[in-house]
Image (cartoon, rainbow, N blue to C red; front, side, top):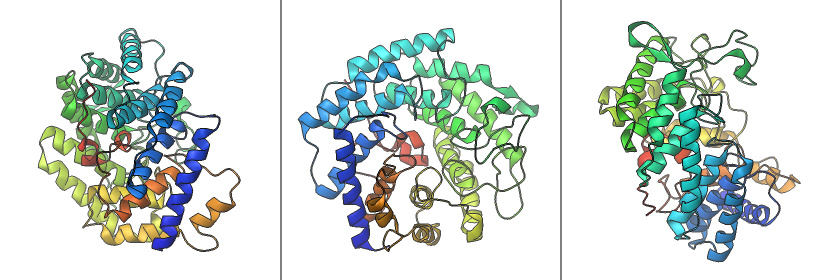
Length: 404
């Protein structure tokens, strides 16, 4: 990629994020709206400008986030907990002192909902379900919250789990929950989704993160994690191209992405290896990544450059999981959607009247990937830990939060 074009794209995104955040907000979520955009802007300002955002401007933006909490259901990527995560991270880094009281009140409400099974997401997944709430709960307990949020989230996951032979545990996705690509109408009777975004890998990553950093619910989290890993071992394929499909009921290899496929699964295994102190899980992840490095390029399945399922997002995740082992594949991924040129990502951004500036599937996430790559692929400095909800292997553990 052209270094000049990358720098120009990052600056163009930074400018557009500031303009969007100064205007009216139609979406305040972490995935596609203001919460994720604020985190991205704060990180980009530090990494590319060497300075922090104006404190008064940032305080007003955080207050705008908190004011929108009642409009959002419980959920991490698309719900209230994503707004709270962004506000708390900005509070942590900039010392604003604005978010903790609102977060404590929201946490009390969430705990009551978890204990009485009301007003909760119907799904177990990471994006908008209980897996995402567990990730937020562990983050809060790591930060000093005394509420047993993790214990309550794990109890909900236990209530939703299915048991197979030999102590295997999994979470079944009924047909009413299946929407769009890659599942589509392929599983009219439902399926056992294996992805990070909506399936087993995401739940296991959340359980591993909670087991490693949280205060409550640890024995039950460990039990569910071990049972889920036993189930995964029976689903592993040996076709030479991929270890897992999109669902247990599918033999077709999944694409290379965070949301589905071996790359996201390897991230969950990396976290599980730390939480369970089991090097064999790291070895399993290494074998999966080695297979991925030999996979024909046409089978990688990229359709865009975004973090969720795109080429640049996959390159970012490869840097977190196996920077040396996957260096050639990482470089290949970054070439698939060029930044420079008449049809490059920069030109597309400049032509678009309303470009997608989201973190999960938009230019904010792309700019963060490029900015980190220019800093030798390492994590940001002690700025906002924007990527924590992605549970990208050990990267999720590279923050130490203190709110009180």
